Image (tube, rainbow, N blue to C red; front, top):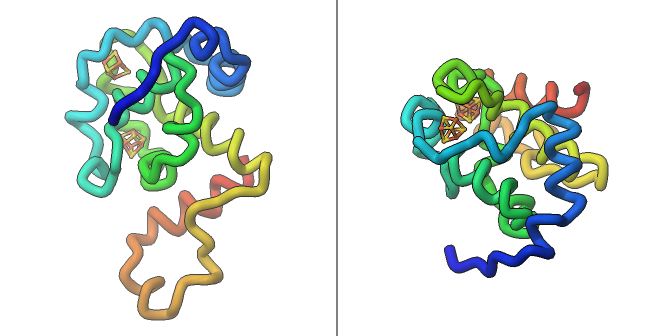
Length: 135
Ligand code: SF4
Ligand code: SF4
C-alpha cells in the first residue's frame, strides 16, 4: 500500500473521533504485531489489525474506511488480551465501523445473502454483523 503521510492527515478530526469512540490512545501502539499474530480472522483480512491501528494513527481514513478487514473482524477480543500496551484494538475497529455505519454504510448485508451463502458464513460472523447495528 502506497500512502502519503502528512501533518494535516495526522491532525485530521477523524483520528480524534476514533480515539473518542474507542476510548483508546492510538499513539500508544508501537507496532509489535502481537495483535495480528493472534487474530483468528487474519487470513481473510486485506490489512492486519496492527496496520489498522497504524492507519488510524496516521489519519489515513480513506484507506481504513475502504478496508475489508474492519468488517471481517469478529470482535472476539483476542487482540485486546495480547497487546502489551493495553490497547483495545477491537474497540478501535468498532469505532471505525461506527463512523461508517453512521453514514449508513455496511459491507455485509445479511438479508442480501443467498441461503447457500448464509449456510457457509460462520455463525459468529452473522452475530457480529447484527451486533454492529446495536452498538
Ligand atoms: S499488540 Fe498493541 S502495541 Fe502491538 S501492534 Fe497491536 S495494538 Fe500495537
Ligand atoms: S477482535 Fe477482531 S482484530 Fe481482534 S483478534 Fe478478534 S477478529 Fe482479530
